Length: 175
Image (cartoon, rainbow, N blue to C red; front, side, top):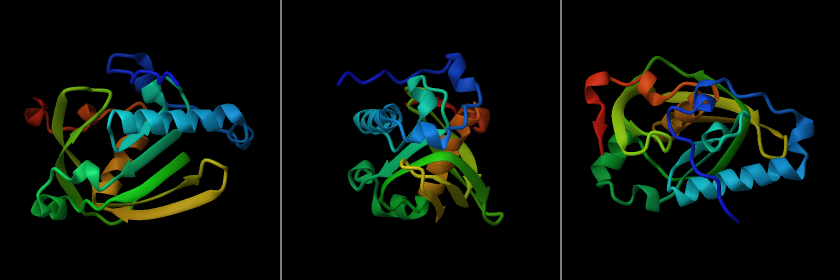
């Protein structure tokens, strides 16, 4: 299967609010193929999250997964500071994000749609997300640390927001 390219910054779709997905759409083979494609693109990149607009599809769908291999390059102390623990593949359709508490964290963040750059971004430490799974079943996930950061980053994509809109500008750097 030929995978679509990851849309890069400057493309209009990255600055638009993505469309809500209906239950009728979820039940189609085309939607299931979209989810499979998103997972394949995310893993091939490699990345820990992907939003449908990043492959040119204006739909409120995100996929995320953080494997042991994805953070293997980090020292144990870095993993601890980032609260980065592996988690299984998650798919959220029409996600609604709710920050929990007032704590936030500053960490370096990159994006597959802004290839080659990173910056420090402040994000909520803990969030709760609810939405539908890839089959239309309701789900909720309360998480903190790195998974919460990934969720906030990907949900931002669905609202036309990029991390550069939230970054500490003096931290923006080529990687």
